[in-house]
Image (cartoon, rainbow, N blue to C red; front, side, top):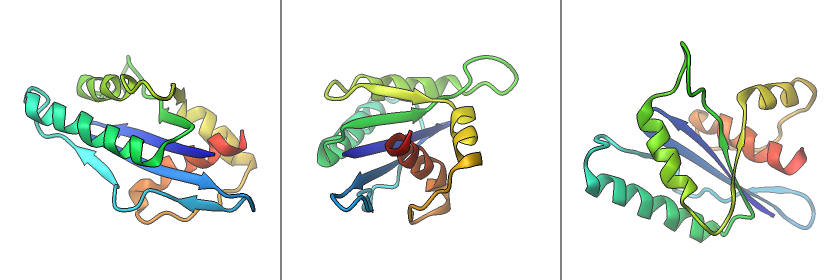
Length: 137
C-alpha cells in the first residue's frame, strides 16, 4: 500500500509519501519532492503550475490513499482562505479519494503509539506521522 500525507500551511503544501513492503517495513517514497509554495494566489500561472506539479507527484507515487491534515475553517485559529484554495485544487485529483484527519485524532493516536518512520527534514514530521497513522489505524 502507498500513502501520501499532506499538510497545508498558509501558502505551502508539504507532502510525504510512504509505502509498506511485504516485510512490513516502511519506505519513504517522497524523494526530492518536499513541498510546494505559491507566492501569489491570483496568478493563474502559479495556480496551474501548482496543480500540475502536485498531480505529477501523485501520479509518480500512484497512491492508494491521500490524506490531508484538517485545518480549522472558523474561529480564532482559523486557516487562511488561500490554504483552502490549495486544498480545493488537491481535492480535484480524481484518481484517489482524498480523506481528512484532524490534528486531535493524530495527537490521540500518538499518545498511545510510537512513531518509527525516518524523514529527511523537520518540517515533514507532521505529514510523516499522518502517513504512518493511515497504515496503522
